[in-house]
Image (cartoon, rainbow, N blue to C red; front, side, top):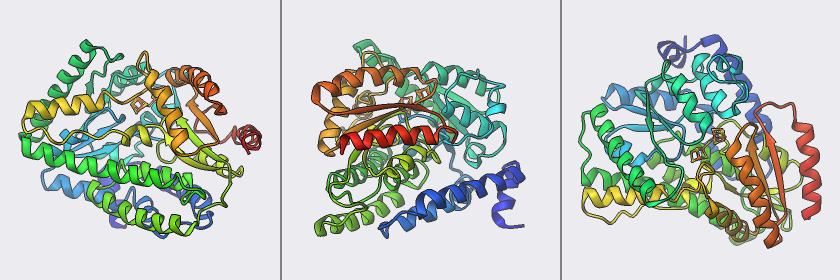
Length: 423
Ligand code: BJ8
């Protein structure tokens, strides 16, 4: 038996079903990723990370645990990784993008629940996710109704802690969020037995900001025509940013950006200059949700940005690293996280402005808005976004889908018509 298998057994995974999952995932990845032309050399690192996403990275987490570190899992970019790192723990994203264990998930949540929620529940109940099984604490948040009610049910199956994310950005809401940050800090200190200090928090802020900066650099390079990297590869990089060691990831993406810069200087790209450029906007696309980017780029367009939590919504704003007191640093954290323009907020006009601004900087010919089926917040905002973009003369295609492959042909037909229209 291989070392990986022994580790998965220890984590109580369903080995047979897990083998099947890895096989399907490998084939899916091959079809969607390895078939691309003009791929960057730097993507070999991503291919490697993904091939070992349930192997070497899990081994690293087990080694960290053996050395006394705790592992904290999250589902939302509202959970401040800076505090987790400052407490000496490791943070990993647990959002799941595969249609796995839906039937089991429907034992806990209603059928009309979005695929993202059903997926993480399905992974847990089917014993298929070594990340969930490695976690000492899982942090949920009161964002959409689907998630907050799902966490109630999920708490019987996993060590949950829930942060209260407000629904508006009023002064009272900001004060509530600031208090939640303090409560989370104290919970982490209790979990790890380690006090968070000004020094450890500032160091963690530098680490997380550095990762944001390198992803900002990557995104800025995608404004070039021809586009130097495919949307599929850029999405994969953003997805891996939630799993990989932050410092190693930042260094690797820095090297990849050097390669991209050289490409841009030579006028080279993944598709010819003048290829229709589209911005993706909406719900987060968790690993291995690559369906829509594959459909879009298979329809003759190139994706030049992701306005999503697995994209610019997570990397656009930095934390102010300059305060020298704990109070000042916690203020800075609270302020930065309240800039996240999740559709769960009301009103949320800044998101409309941010999408329009991103479409302009990335020189997008159109925007594809993606909402998961049964996701009320993003479906509502798609309508609002349509009005904002219409005023600016930017075409919008609104799609609702899930993780199944049943609607691929239907999606293709709609995307192809849209690409032709913006060409
Ligand atoms: S900050 S976008 S990561 S909540 S798709 S589960 S909204 S019904 S994911 Fe999100 Fe945080 Fe907001 Fe970002 Fe609900 Fe919609 Fe499902 Fe969603």
